[in-house]
Length: 208
Length: 202
Image (tube, rainbow over all chains, first blue to last red; front, side):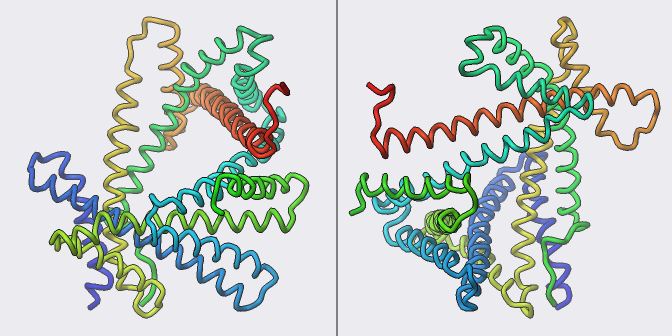
């Protein structure tokens, strides 16, 4: 039983990952088919994991309602909206007319407006970031302002701005981001390796 | 009842509710915020259900692809996480999920983010642009070599930091511009679709 509880999950993690990684090195058709099947299974299990997460949120909001907390009315709004979307989505599928209406007139506007309001957060962040404390902050500010000057009315009054901005974007920005990408890739590979080999087991959770 | 006019009024109510946060946090904003959470969860749940039905349930039950019962069972086992006593039952499912994802991410990162990026930096140093590009990439990469503590490398790392600051600044500037265009889009919706004002005032 101890094997099933603690060793089997690590074996499954390693085995599933090995099949997918090894198909890049060995040209065995059956292996490639198995890897493709595993990726399909991944999508299916991920959908269940999503349901698990949604269940957790429903539990949280239901608890707030049953305890009659001051925020219960907002929790009720969340659960009612979720129920409507889910019922319509299950009843007439996500390609149905009512579901499309809900998506176009409820989900889309709030999603777009939420992103639009981040403009204000980002502006206040810019104010804090652009207070020139040292030469790095100065470079950051000049680069950001150049990007902002290349569009709209600024480009009319300052025709050279789009050309400078294009150069900054194509040469130093791409070069700097490439180094960040390489650094991030190394850390991703290292972390994935730790998970696959069982050195990192946080995802398996606790319990008995 | 569910026509475009009702939809536009509802969308305007929700949009203004979120914008009302600009004045201060208020019940209207909080209501719309919670509606957003519910709608986002509903969209995800519906799409997840649809994909399970299309990829697994229908092929397994109607086309005789019995092997697809395996991920369905593994997926169902995940719900044992809600019980402290039987939480361990979900470990193998979670292991499969994280193992396959790690493998995909690892191979993708090695191919697209590591080898391809390094290969693209190996360019002929026959122009000022190519030289600047190579120097900034090399210097900024050196900044991530945490095991290197040689004094001679310090100016190179500083140069790398400047390169990254240019990159972060430019990315930040571009993000600000894209958010402004989203904000303009919502204002256009309110003015031209909801209030039906004519663009240009003519």
